[in-house]
Image (cartoon, rainbow, N blue to C red; front, side):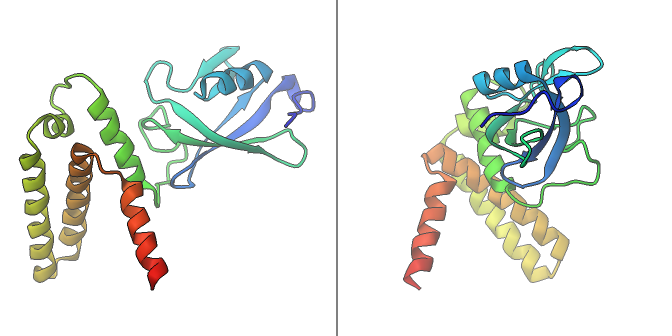
Length: 200
């Protein structure tokens, strides 16, 4: 793929960044040839700042990097579409997307697995509930799944829809932590579901 950096003003290509999991648009930036090469080299999306007149890697100060997973360009090769996995909020205001009304519609469970893995790989983190579960005994993780499952049942029996949604989110979180503690991945569970569906 040969990108046309000469067609646009100052050799800058507009770059649309889309969440690979949720398919939501995260931001729009600009790249010159050097920014694109740096992005290819380290997979952290790097832009050219039109105000600072320099390259800047998204997350270089906050740690909220955008990891490039795949990319495409338009028919004229002068606009980039990058599919990324965000390592935190994309917007400098702490929002998921630079577009205020955009919220992720799917892919959250996959993103949760990534976050839990990051917590597992880190050293001791003060006040990290996830890290405390991962570093604790397996029985505690299993117990939390049981407790949350009971809460889901209670909410359902009460007919409290919002409570059922919230307790379900708690259950999925604790189940994901238990998976990580036990060496199980979401992909393995999805594979079983797929195989069962094929049998039907």
